[in-house]
Length: 458
Ligand code: PMP
Image (cartoon, rainbow, N blue to C red; front, side, top):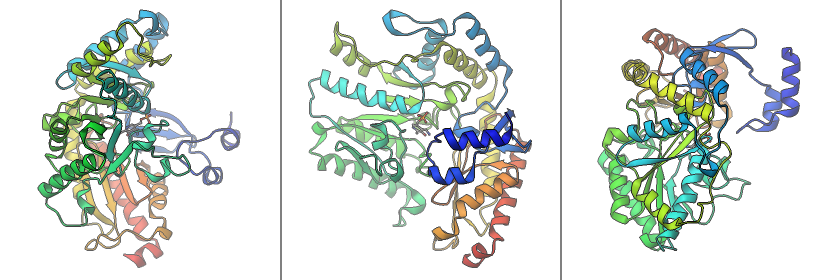
């Protein structure tokens, strides 16, 4: 099909996620055609360095033979097996075992999903089942962070704290609550790292108190690094302090590692950095490196035991046709091999250090207020006044201009609506890929700075 026809049918029939539909109809689709390593090519043959790994997911890069072969072999051998009626398949069992071995502490039970949203949704449902099994019938409230993202399911989207996920969707629900993000750059009060941590702990305690005490609160959810809220990296010690507070309050701690898992911030899971063992952990994206849909909810033995005992001889009524899909699982195994024996995790750490250093080298740029990094994950806060941390006025549309200019310069990144730029390059990037990324980003920043109305505001 030629490009014109594709563009027309896209406008007529494809409802794109998280876009204003009419704006998209006007803009038209950016159709990608092929990809290799860290680079994608669009339908016009324009080559772009994918500085966002698709949607923070193609950690291994594109076109990996070992992943393609694993999928091919599995498609030939057994393209589908359900997990219902006691059925299972070899790759699914093996992947569950590998994940349990890799995950921190006693996160030994794996519930496979199709992605991150249904991993969060599964967590919510099973947390309900857990507390009802314990006879703690009032523990219903769940607390998450402002600026947090926990997917787009009809319940999870209420824990997500981005306004467009709530407006006109009748969210958040009555049992969904948020406390302020740690957000060091904009905490507004000039607090030290330790003071930010202390404030977050007391915000959580105060919220629990306000909700009637621990008997009324089930869990606290957070991302080890907030992703879709603008790549907000917490002060060191934050995660551990929040985990410990949850234990003290007798509420469950869920780490949403959908973005941060699988080497994105350096270690296999970001929780490891502070020796944190959550009660539950959600993963997706890097699990299959985006080659097939798959996510998972990992739960501690103490959670599983209560659920299993609570169910007795009655089925736990939670299931998806494609839970533990064997092709996705085979892909997951091939991807885990790459992280481990394939050296992808090590490469991500090494190149991640270089990436951090090079990005920080751009800190003096007039448009950059702050560079935040955690391995191969970065957020750049754009400002027009570095001292006062003033954001560009909304009318300037700096984010869309950055994206457009970046695309022209052969670079894909995320341009968040509130003028934060997000990077999550594939972990397979070489040092020279990073040099290309930085050069194209610097050029993009300079071109945008040279737009007259933007220059006037700086
Ligand atoms: N949790 C987090 C932290 C995420 O970043 C995302 C996706 N960006 C999700 C959950 C939802 O995952 P999915 O889009 O695969 O449903």
